[in-house]
Image (cartoon, rainbow, N blue to C red; front, side, top):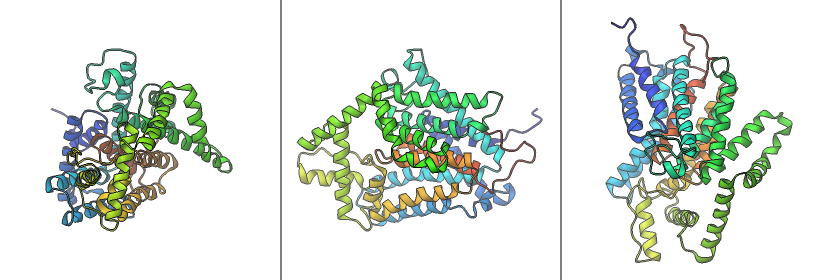
Length: 418
């Protein structure tokens, strides 16, 4: 018999932390278990001595509930079919993962274990991508892009952004890495993560995210009087990478070519051209319904209608699509207030980081910056894998850095961070 019972609650939390970036099956199972766990904690709050009371003073849970309530309320006026509307509402339901992690993680030791599980899984994911690049056998790489674009379980777009954020976390938490060589290992993994994005993967969004995160990290390391360099630092890094990395150079050159072609021909046949056409259509939809939007899940319906007005032969896209821009997607569904609501959600999380110790604050703020930048080019919260990654990671980091989270009595303080 086991002398000590297995802590299933912590096991579920660690599984959720390790799942992001892996296969959708693992992510789905872990999210389901986390929802069941969170519901149990709320139902049996007195028995489990849930830390819900520790959420007092936090802005994030309120912002999450308000955002989800706004989407739910828009069911009353949405132009989308009910299946599309409910499907989109469920997609945004992943925001609840942030709150569920905040109420299920009881102390800082558990938050460290969970973030440690996240780090192990992300290191495995990063190593797998490098193995694919070296043409080594990687039997667990199930993505169709694995052999040609070195993305293990998802697309190169998602994995590039994930690797960028993980590299930034390793850098900011390097002083808290456990073990004699923990600090050096964290710096080495950060280096592998960023070089993987710039020299192995080909996602342009990830290139931009990495440049921004590196620029911010350098700025934070400088004395305050020199931090103005953040104005030119991203441009200098981009220029250096343009000449140093063929991946970055080819992709930036392709953007210029595609944008020029779209400006001249107005035909959306390239990746950049399609994005520009989607954004233009989204702005048209917002212009038609600026106050309340067209309702949750309405993007595909609005896009198909507006495209038919320009081209009667347009072939309809399926429901639950998106314009590859999170800010505009909220605007289409909830109008201009929706865009402001998304910005308020990001700022509420940022506000909660101001109460954290510096390393945890910078790690969380870097994640928020990455989400904001990625959302300029993709629907990074709405989409499945990358959205799950951001929601679960932000929940872990907010729990780890939350000033009201107690230290574990039976374990050392949280200097043993990931």
